[in-house]
Length: 212
Image (cartoon, rainbow, N blue to C red):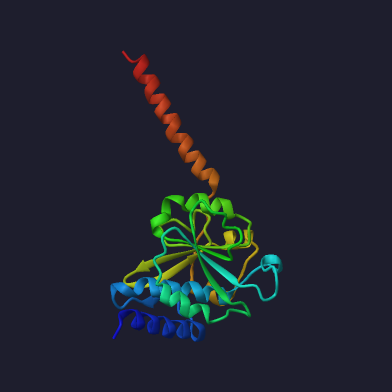
């Protein structure tokens, strides 16, 4: 049996499971299941998030899920999910470069391969009505809205409620209850830490110059 068909069937089952009995985690059975599973989660997040009324140009406009950089997802599974509307909207998967304009996307997924671009992408989308989803350490605490984690062979997710509120997104209490809620790292803390490092460096250099 073709392995891609197996993964596709797996995602269909997971989508049904998540839609009917959403779980806070899902056990990985084999290394090849991580990204089909994450794609199923990504698709189902759309069912538990309410976007601002002006996020769609027309009532029947598609819901755009944008993948930044190299997509880790199967094209066959994406094609399968395109046939499954969410809230009256067809689903459209779009592959974009990190430098492309992302404001037209409803969901932006930043894979770990683009983690160096994650902070810039999150800053560019603040307040834009876009659900940002990542999979790298610190993504949510640095301003992303949802971040995937893998703990003990289980795929879990974190949610930054402040970032969601700032984007004008309403996340259902059901989804929130299943997530680990994280507190955003205040930018002034980052600035203060960096300033302290720079100041310490200047002091050390000055001491070396004026030393005995």
